Image (cartoon, rainbow, N blue to C red; front, side, top):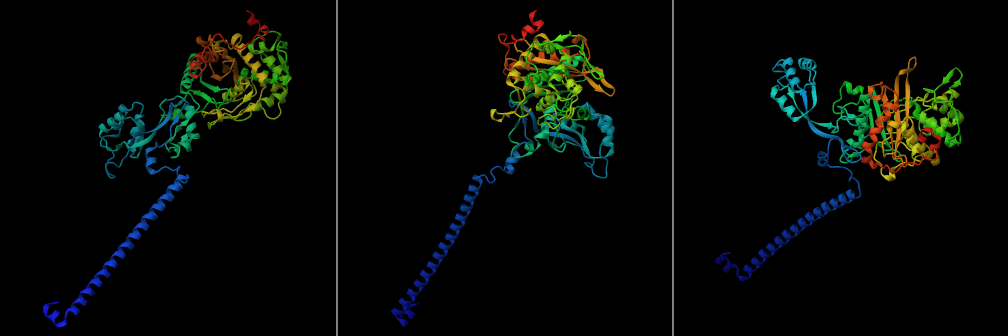
Length: 581
């Protein structure tokens, strides 16, 4: 407003105009403040809502809703397949990244040749790097123009040498591989992982879900196996095979109180790091899947059943040891043992005739019931998938069948069946299933009673006497108080039993004053060699395996030699002429 205007309208008009402008400014300012406060309120509410949702999520996770699930980052850090370890944490199976050799015929273009050099020349160069490759087969594969693996699991230095060949079609992708750091050791226990990423044959198959589960594969799966015991068992079985020119061997070391398997071996074995045609042929497990007539190793079980039933009360009683005639069949001993024998002599000298008569006195029903209580009528109890079904005599046992079962014929079981039965016979009379898992004290199964504790005590005495004075003397390891029984059974064939083909077995336990472990050592068709004094029976080939094995593994598993201790057999020693010498 200029001076003229102010003069024309006067002071009152000017004052009124200025007041109006101030009111308008205040109104605008108040609106802006209100709008700012409104916005701040919405922002605060938004933050409060986000915080509330976060708190709800934390509470949900805290109560375990998805706490077991791993994030994608965590999964990326986990191995592609879980680790398997022995009872002491020693690795048995691991997953790791490795190179593979892949033939890609389209590497140089779809219309051109797949290789720069001739297929035969490239195959020859690969043969230099990998001497075990089939050169002709690889040359044919390269010439066919068909994509595929040439080799799995390359070492870095091998990959470098393949790279130097200069063929683009020879690609080396990085893949996740399964490695068995102990090589062939415990192959039948572990099994292997096939190309599809799933376990086959052994514990790889049994534990496949756990080993593949992201929630579990970060924790190693622990077995009952002890690699030190496993290595010693395989070494001694292999030595026994070579010394006696046997076709195969099998063995097991079993904890008598828990059923845990410390070692299990079937020879010859396959290599889980390299599965080929020969490896496929060797996957059959002699310990759990093959059934045998195990011969005289059944005689202590027969005697134990007879003691339990009250058939044997007096160990000094003389039993008729002459040949037994049942119908048109005659049961004889391998060589004459005299006209009569007492019970200790029967086991020490391994008499078929007296064992048959004891079984006859026991009767087929009680004998059959004992064998069923020991699991002899079912597949062996263990987690491994390959489990053989016994050749079981059936529901009704004729007199002759009952008598032959008494000395280990007419019934065929696995070595694992025998190991579990011997454990029950010496541990106080309790049968427990075998297991490949390491057990805590609270996880040990209660088991079932088969023999009285007093019967088990008597059998420990008799088993020890066999190793001191009988056919088991070659298994007696000084200081370890070994007890055991030999068994040499002819293998059945198309035309009856084959005299030239034996299954030689030694079933043992130690230390007999407080049994801790059972050992089964078996040779398939051993031949008489200079190492066995040209004998084929278990006393000369299977028993020495146990005699060498026990001192090797005893100190490793808590049993140290002690020449000042032994089981008291004074009550039966007067009945054994050999003990008086």
